Length: 608
Image 1 (spheres, rainbow, N blue to C red):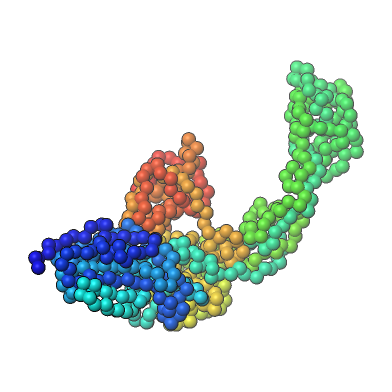
Image 2 (image 1 turned 180 degrees about the vertical axis):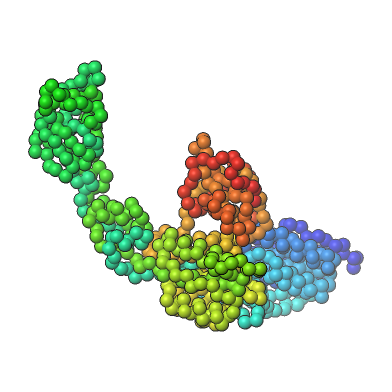
C-alpha cells in the first residue's frame, strides 16, 4: 500500500450543531481508499447517571472557542499519526434519552493508530473544549463542565468486519480530589443559569404587620387600592381669586377688570358663597373651589381695589379650569395604587399615608449575616502592618444589603483556620436568614470555604460561574438558608453581590422582579472581544450627551482588586462571552445609580 501523506483536517470536518447528528454523514467525511480501520464513536444520553434516573440533558457552550479547539484536536492527531483522518460533531441544546450528543469518526491505514487517535480525541474533547452539560433529574439539575462523555458509547471497525462495543465512564473534569475530598457542583455555570438557581432556591419570608412609619425599605405583601378620589374635591392649585373665566376674558394691564370680593376661603374651610357674575372669592392653595367658579387667577395678576373697598382688579384673562386641581385628577377611586411586591420608598409610603394606611402588610426583612475571611485582613480601626490590609468588603456588603431592604449583621473577620471558620459560620447561620462571606472560595491552599461547606453539612448548589470579575462565587444552602461565598477582591465581591446576593434578598422580601434592570446605551469607544465564554462586567459611566443620547464611557481601572473606580462609575457594562463592540455600537448596561446629564471629555475612559 502506498504511504499516505499527512492530511490536515479541514474545518468542514468539525461542527457544533443543534440538530440531530447524522453518523453516516460523519463517517463519509473520513472515508479514504485503502483504509485499514474506520472507527465511529458516538456518545449517547443514558437513562441512569450517578445512580439517579436522568430525564434529559442540556448542552451549552462557547461555540467559537469550541470550534477552534476541535480544529486543534484534529491538528494534533495529524501531527502524531500521519495518514489518520478525523471528523467531530458535538450537539448543543436539549437532548432526550438515547440521543447522540457527540460523535467522532476516524479512519486510518492501521487499526492501532485509529484506536490511539480516537482515545486522544476523546480525552482532549473532555479536557479543552468549552461545553457545559446540565443533567436534569426528577429532584433538580446539576451543571457539569467540559465535554463529559460518560454516556454509553460504541466503536465500530467497519473495514475489518469487526463490531466492538466499548463503554466509557469518565469522571468529571473539574470534580477535583483535593485535600478534603470531592466537591459536587464545582464546575462553572453560565450567568443566567446561576441566577435562575439562586432565585429558584430562595423563598419569600413571612408576612408581618408593621406601622407605616417603619415600612420604608420593605416590600408590600398585598396590593393596595384607592378607596377614594385624589383629589377628593376640586381645589385651587395657587393662591389667588376664584371667579368666572368669562368675566375677565378682556382683562389686561391697561384695562383691568373690577370684581366684587364676596369671601375669603383658607385651606381646610368650606366655601359659603356662590360665585355669580362680576364676583370673586379670595382663595388659598388647597382650598375647595366655590360653586359657580370655573377658574382661579394667580394673586400676582391682581391688585386690591382700594377705592371699592371689597373689590379686586384682575390684570390677566384666564381659561376655564385654569389653576384648578380637579377631583380624581390624580387617582380615581378603585384604582390599584401599589401592587404586591412593590418596594416601599419615600413616595410609596407617602401615598399609603394619603389613603389612611397606618398599618402595612409587608414581607419580613431578611437578616443577613456577613463574614469576612482571611488572615491578612485588619479592622478599619487597626494600623496597617506589613502584609496586611484593612477589610472593606464587610461594610461594603452591609451597605448593599441595606439598599435593597435587608438588615445586615457583621460578624467580623475570621482568620484562615478551618475549625474557626466552621464555628463562626454555624453561629451566624443560626441567627440569620442569609449568610454571606467574602474570600476563601478559590482553589488556593488557604481557601477553605468549599471544605467548610461540607463540614457544616451545607449543600453546594454551584461553585464558580462564567463571569469576570468574580468567577469563584459559591452558592449553597444550610437547613434551607442560603449561603453566598463571594470572591475576596473588592470589585469581584461587589459584582458577585450585585448579580446574586441582592436579587436573592429582593426575592426573599417579596419582589416580583428581583434581577438587575438593563438598558441599551451607545458606547463611546471600542470594547475588545476576548476568546472566553465568560460574561464580562466593565465599570462605566452612563450619561446623557448634549444631543440627548444615552452614552457610556468605560472606566480606566478594571482590576478586580480596585474599588475606587466605582466612584467614577454608575453602571456595569455587560459584555457577553467572545463579544466585542465598536465605538458607537449599542451595549447593555446595568445601572448602579442615577445617570448624569452630561460628562466632560476628560472623564475617565479607556477601551477594554
